[in-house]
Image 1 (tube, rainbow, N blue to C red):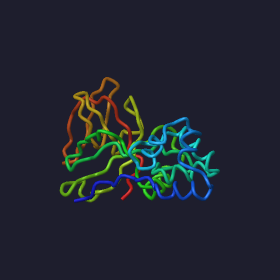
Image 2 (cartoon, rainbow, N blue to C red):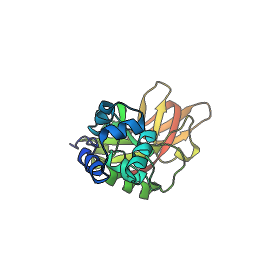
Image 3 (cartoon, rainbow, N blue to C red):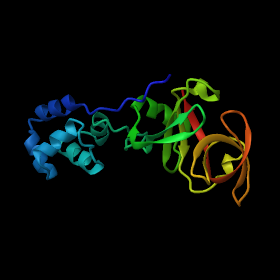
Amino acid sequence: MGQTMPAVEVDKDWFFSKLEEKNRSLRGLAKHMNLDPSAVSRIFSGQRKMQMQEAQEIAMFLGAPISEILSHAGLSIDLDGLPTRILLAATIGEDGKIIRLKEPRPLPQSVIDRAQAAIGRHNGQIIAAQVRASSGSFAIWDDAIVLFGHTDTVDPASIGVMSICRLRSGEQIMAKVLSARKTGEARLTSANGKTEETLLETATPVLAVIP
């Protein structure tokens, strides 16, 4: 069975050593950010997520690149050095059903780097889901990260390929879309290999699978 993707932690020691290196204090940083020192402490301890504007202010105060601040803050960055648009938002079971996480979380930078290499500079939001399948058709992808884009329609590019599908019933699954009509009627091949007739709300093709 694959392991749950670990949360990315803030490198607290790096921030405090950087303050010492610059001969600056936490209180001084808090004043610069117009925050209470306890609020900054919570950011560095990982109890409070650092916001982009806060990262920019810290970078200015420490005289460090924004990408370096984001990296040590546990915020994954993309090829442009900006916070990545790729977040782990769901899991995919051995039956192909997608279960959303209560709160999306960043992926390890090593996974982000491989994802960026796989999809290039894809426009729009990228969503990631982790396969958790100890048996069945998806077992060969157990622990893999599946990347796909957000859509509110049935993307024509999803026809004939493995896609993330939302059914009219509200259920979301990963399946191969064999055909789909503008009125919603569709034929899918599900995780168990069976072809089924259903009503499709949205469908977007899988962009990449990161083992």
